Image (cartoon, rainbow, N blue to C red; front, side, top):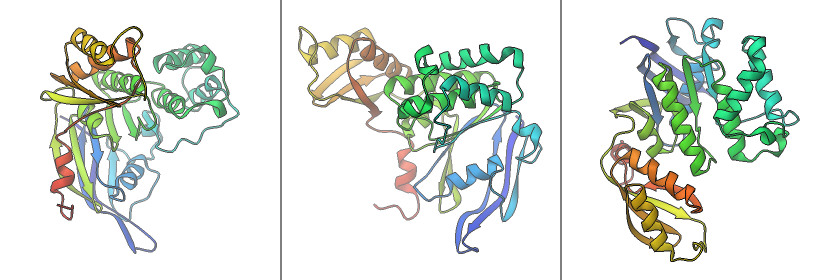
Length: 314
């Protein structure tokens, strides 16, 4: 395989060298790979992403993206980026915002309206939302719009920083589908996230960063994992029309090929065979009118990286 991203001996300090954010980091991301970056707060993940994007100048070492510098215009033209902190022009509508970025990317003018409409539809923003001022968007809508912008022009390199922060379960399912589609299309994707279960679902490899160094790497197979218990948090006080909550949850779980275990409000627990089974279960619950607030596996393979890391509390 060909390395799309090469990092060699990358070091970066702040405060005149007093704070070492990155300490001789070296890694490669293969073309078409989806790489997850995980680690505790202050580990250097955001600084690493900033260097990959060419936003930060390292003190030592270097980054090459498809053989070029990260700030090379040829690289920028094929790069998509969703930042963690979205600072958008609040006076614009969502449609105007996408049109503006479509123009900045120098994409074909004749395709602008169609491309923007398609991008908005893909992330689940309807016509009413598209024409609303961004200042009236919820956090989840902002994330969807940011993802739509990052995907304009089908970038070959895609960086996503905490992409599902503030997103509801339906948005998480949408994110998962869109990332899987881009990966299948050959894009090289780098995801920085604290959502370990989602990292495990969509990434092919994960690097664990701590104290500015890559402490370990974990190879995963996106979308495939062992049977697990899924905890689903429901809105308080929910009861289905004309029936018992536990009975309704068991019915929906059976229809999705999962098994209902228990309801200890506000949490319900289910057994699912794999990640695809978890996706089917959540889709069935949402379609059945169940007010899902969040969902997460009881356990995950990536948590052990935090437990086993040097200096972690026992």
